[in-house]
Length: 92
Image (cartoon, rainbow, N blue to C red; front, side, top):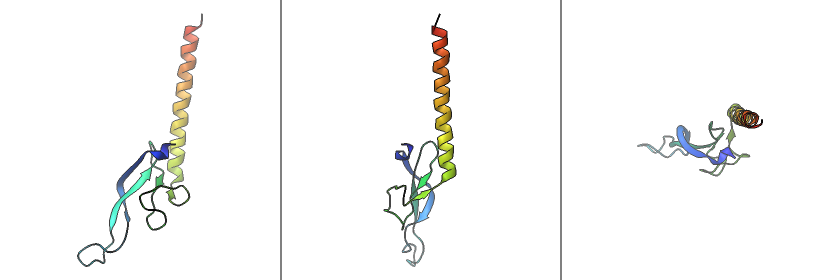
């Protein structure tokens, strides 16, 4: 679900080669990326639909996905632990 949090940059990718004074330089644009708090899915221009993220076509960074999973797991475990402590405090 966190892939729906999308933002662009600061990473850049080549979206063509008709830029610059001689129209022969690469056209660099900020890359669309998805994932929160760590971005793990990056748009790959020329391979997938530009400016849209797709798990099957775009660059998936496994290490960042693992970091996200660990962060969410720790958050859920802290929440569960806090709720357990509150229930113990309320019971006589």
